[in-house]
Image (cartoon, rainbow, N blue to C red; front, side, top):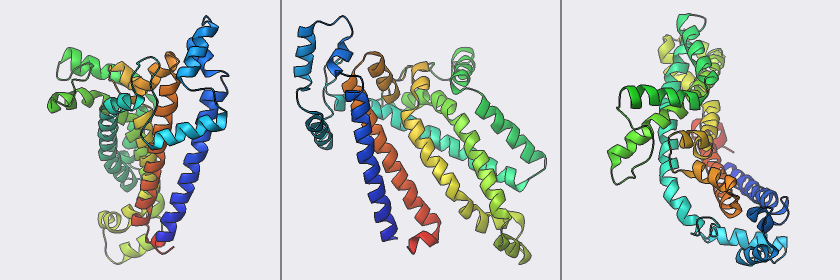
Length: 313
C-alpha cells in the first residue's frame, strides 16, 4: 500500500505543477500585458506603468512564476487590486461559507443517493427501480438555480422557515445553518441524482458476479448479500463520483451563491472575473486546484481501504 500511495502522491504532485503552469500562462501570458488588461482600454500609459510596478510585472515570465509559486507556498496569495487587501484574507473569510456549504450538500447527496441506488438495484426491473430512475432523471434535468428559486418561493416566501439569502456568520450557528440549508438542498439534488444512478449501475454489475451467486446459494437473502458483499465492492466507482462532486461543490457553486447572496469562493471568483482582478482569479483558482488534488488523493486512500488488492501493491 505504501508504494501505491507514494506513486499516487507523485502523480498528483506532477499534476499540481502542470496545473500551476497552465493557470499562470492562461491568466498572465495569453491576455498580453496583465496591467493593461486589468485597467481596460481607456487606461493611460502612466496608470499602466504604475500598476505594472505595483504588481511587480517587470521580471521575466520564469521569475514571475517562481515568485508567485513560492509566495503561495508561504501563504502569500498577493494583494487584490480592487479590494486592496491580501487575497489570503479574502479566501479565509469566504472559505467558511463555501466549505460548510459543500460538505452539507455532499452529506445530503450521499444520504439520499446511496439508499436510493440500493433500492433501485434491489428492485431491478420493478416499480421501485422505475420510480428511482424517473426521479433521478428529473433531478438531473432540472437546473439547480431554478430549483433554488422554487425552494425560496416555497420555504422562504410562502412559508418563512428559512432565509431567502445572505449569511449572518458563524457567531450565530443556528442562523448560519438555516442560511445554508436551502442552497445545500439546491446543490444536492442533481448530485444525488447522478450518484444514485452510479450506485445503481455499480451494484447491479456487482450483483451479477459469481461470488454473489455463491453467497446466495449458501443461504443469504438478497439484503444480506448486498450488505455483506456487494455494497463494499460497488462503492469504488461511487467514491470517484463523490470526489468529483465535492470538488465541484466547492468550486462550482457560483450560480447558487449568487442566487442566495452567499459571500463564498464562487462569488469571489465571479467578482474577480467581472472586475478583471487577475490577482484574485489566479490565486483562488490555484487554491481550488490544490483542493481538488487533495480530495483526489483522499479518494485514492479510500480506494485502498475499500479494495484490499491495492494494499498489496
